[in-house]
Image 1 (cartoon, one colour):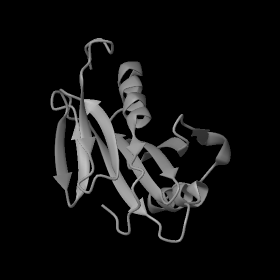
Image 2 (cartoon, one colour):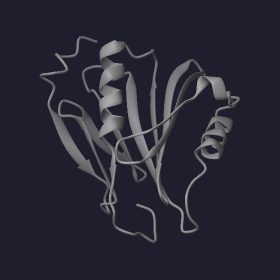
Image 3 (cartoon, rainbow, N blue to C red):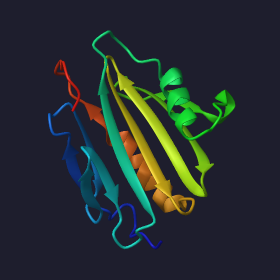
Length: 155
């Protein structure tokens, strides 16, 4: 896909329905909420979708390795530590990320947690993202901010 220059790309803000996380996504992308899950995609391309699943743990923090293992198992993919990127962003959120192919589709999975809140972000497509799309996905993930409010239910 021929994305416009990333420096010229404009972004829109998305805030979860109950306001406990927000993120930016390209203004030329569409947003659809399917069964309560927001899905973002480029209508010109139509080959991939970025989805965000939100969770709240009343008992404390999430074990990102266990959450990623659980998600990969739903796709029949074995967890391999050396294929997982782990880092902490500048707001203190822990992040794990990996990619895999399942049923002839490319998947990119990010698990982000901040205290008792977690989001699982996926991007899946018929084809691997090019460098520009990869940068856009990185920008989206980097923009995720958790609210400092305390919540007792997921949104």
